[in-house]
Image (cartoon, rainbow, N blue to C red; front, side, top):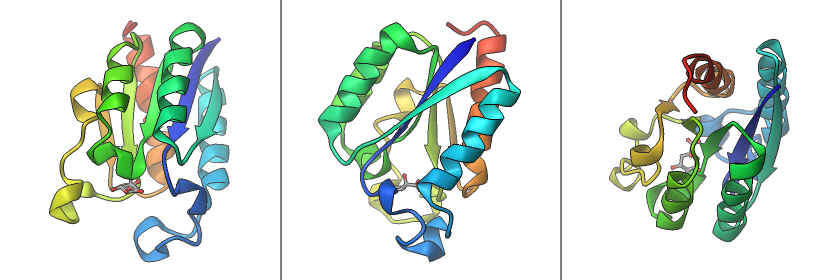
Amino acid sequence: MMRVLVLSGPNLNLLGEREPEIYGTDTLDDHIARATRQAESHAMSLDHLQSNSEGDLVTAIQNARNTHDAIVINAAALTHYAWSIHDALATFDGPVVELHISDLKQREEWRQFSVIEPVADVCIAGYGGKGYEMAIDAVAELLEAGHN
Ligand code: DQA
């Protein structure tokens, strides 16, 4: 069974109450529950880590080199400046899917640059909570296509 790791960056633990006009009213648990069901429908297992700390996410990516086949990452604000996350993802051989709830291209200029983009196979942004299921579908397709 293929294993996918979903990583969530700072403040995503507040989804549901944080700026609902931008991020919706579903909680992170709601998104992860749907993503887990979607992963199971593709015969994949899903693990999830949310952290407000850059270092925790870097360590999780390093550990995933030995334990997981693919990574889905919503690095939240770290997306826009955390080169240590870029470098860690560059060491990961499997598919990497960048995920955002909001459409970064329609928001402030500082959100339009992503350090994840150069090391991601796919970016899914602007589809709200549905993006979590779309990201899992993208992982399944990349793994089926033989990405390793
Ligand atoms: C986000 C977009 C980021 O710019 C922001 O800092 C977040 C969430 C999104 O999912 O739309 O925290 O990654």
